[in-house]
Image (tube, rainbow, N blue to C red):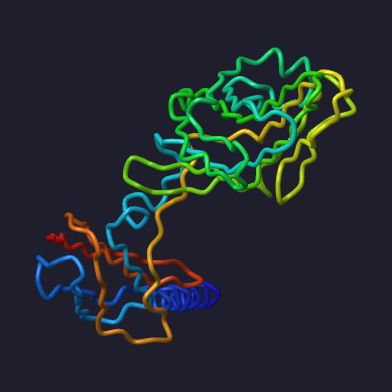
Length: 296
């Protein structure tokens, strides 16, 4: 009798499992055409009703095959704006970069690192406020990915005791981004998130003032001694990239018969629709692909 009960219990458990088995409804996608002009509306029609549908357009940042990508050979780019006044305006603010700085804000660590002066790659203020630097590429300073070496950016202020006094410098804005070969832009930092640290080399009475709004070195009188101060960003990972993302079109509570989309740039795009059924006891996924040509 006990054996019969065990058999019945096992059969009921198996039946329950089969009943709760995750199933993927049929799903097909068709496009009205495989060729469109840039700016035209592309219309996709659906057959079937999966729980969820996610759309990957094939444009930069929206490629299905890169949905789990977190590293790539990027171009690390920075841009900023500056302002100077008082005293004699001359190039005493330098833009420096290092890929072997320790990250510790001490004179010893600063001097132990290798710094490259790339001031001539940027535009600096000669009196006008918010002078844009232009985009400065730091791609050449990216070490191999296995080194895991961050890239640091610094502004070095130097001035001397002189009758005209020492001039003011302000870095008003800052931006750091990674740009991949396929055009994906990954923001890394703005002024407020730059992780700035200041290192005083000469004259501790005059140092950088760091705020979320700007980096500021105040002007000084004719009697102030020679000065050298650095303000250094946090380390930037030149290999970092945001995973490509799809657009969620529907969930289990909706029914969707199709989708429309507009491509603004000519090219060939691998369009992917991912359908899924995600439950407490498992999940099923399938994809449907369409290759589109967008002409000028």
